[in-house]
Image 1 (cartoon, helix red, strand yellow):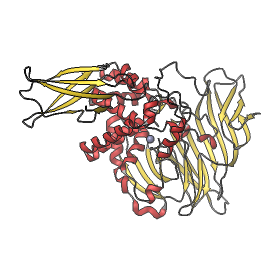
Image 2 (cartoon, protein in one colour; image 1 turned 90 degrees about the vertical axis):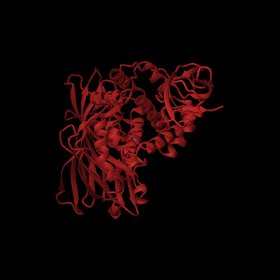
Image 3 (cartoon, protein in one colour; image 1 turned 180 degrees about the horizontal axis):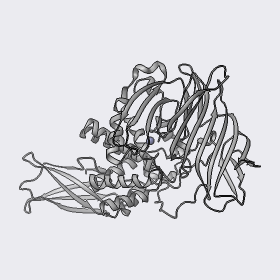
Image 4 (spheres, protein in one colour; image 1 turned 90 degrees about the horizontal axis):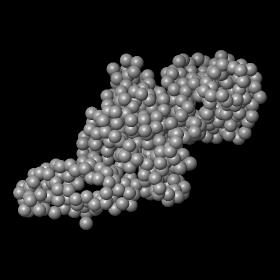
Length: 546
Ligand SMILES: [Zn+2]
């Protein structure tokens, strides 16, 4: 999801409590709304000509998965006019955060719930009057702000298909998830209004269900990634910006075709039939709404947008959108992937040294992070969801994927990711689901790796020294782990620079213990000039020389 934002990081430190203990995997968490599964949202929204009052009708198709007599939907503050269950008017309970709907005892497993509601919207759907752009409405639901305007089971574990019917002033263009089904003038409307319909046929979580209504210029990027889609055709991409910024295009979106093709070649076909990129009013740098990525407006206006953010948000279409974390505590399955795939795009588009620099930058962020030192990546204790937008979910999660790739090798790593994507696409996953796929593709048990890097705070800090044993013609390397976060097990690559100017590479496996002393291969006739530890930036550690 969102690209990192300093404000959100700063906010986090207020809630950090200095806990150091590892959080164990524990039993599976309780489902968010046990006994119900929303299959489809058919959402109609009437947008105003000005102001922030909307009128809505939500028709939910809900499956009962266990005996439950009440459906609890999330909806903050808006007025609820009526609720129909299977077309029958139903008395419902209402409090400031939910609608409680009694379900008939004798009925089929699948129910239709129709809700009429409305009122002034204060969050989730961001309605704004911008001096440059005029009146605009852009949804911005992450993490659980969809409930400000969509009656819903607002949790990533309950994915559903969604249809949108949006009535808006005709001067605005309306974009939403999926494919546009059509638009028509609302008869007799003056000033003219248009009804636009969109349909997303793959299930997505509520935090990705969005609409945009704004004066938007459409830039057609054309068909891309042909042959790499699920439906056997190309992915059509567009960019939408405020009309005065058309000269900025295609700008960084010149890379959009290559990004979709490249990620498709690494993990499998693009999950959806098309992809739009929109300038918007999102509070995040970018928000990966399924098939309709919303980017912050300032980088467009300042013309500072880069392909990096496009790559990050596009990677989310596979990881986060198509494969969604079941629990917020596994957010790294979304943000770590997007961070690492953006770096892989850097490698593809700018080469190895640019990639190494990016990995160095990611590592630097981890090593200097307070939250990394205090909390594990899989942080089941954090209750403030915004605080999860931190260096654990993004940079450390990304670097963990990097270590998996460099340890398992490209072939096993990407085969595992392809299976993971194939198996959990349009569903939910937890970290252990990823672990199992990588274990199957590599044949290596990875429980220890996931525990060490994801369920414990911190990283190793190493103090190293070496000596040359002239009699044996051998280099002996000593590594001491400071143990601040426990001891770590890892492979370490070493480049040995010889007096003759050669560079010889060797690799050792360091065990999870305080002191390691290893004799390096091969033998050397004379003392080396220098040892370069981890030359390719593959280990998430602080390495100190005495
Ligand atoms: Zn992201």
